[in-house]
Image (cartoon, rainbow, N blue to C red; front, top):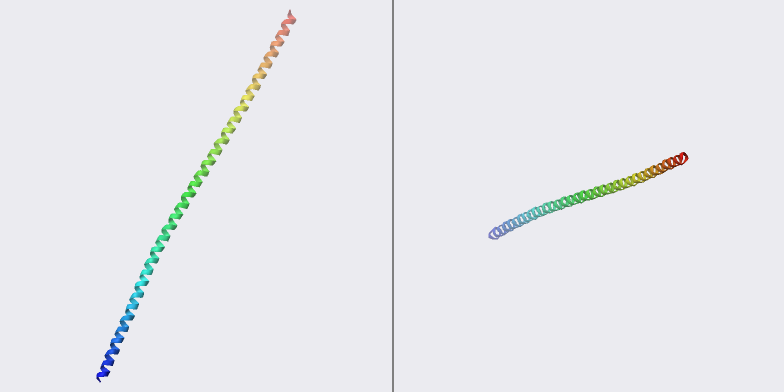
Length: 122
């Protein structure tokens, strides 16, 4: 009977220890799972932050490219306008020169006619 009691006591203690070990394993697994979830959450936040930073950087570069393109387009337009203006001024000068030449030619013709008329009168 004593041996049975010892055996029962030993079996009860082993069962208690086994249950305690199982509980410790469950607690450890739970802690590891929580830790893994926390690390995953931290990594996801870091990844999200990096993606947002990359998106902002891409947007900024895109804006800078658009600004540079617009500036270049404005400069090209200004150069074209200046060239057209210079061309118009040259054409105007040529027209003015042609007009002055024509006026001079007509003046000489009149003078020549007046001279001829005067010579005939004499």
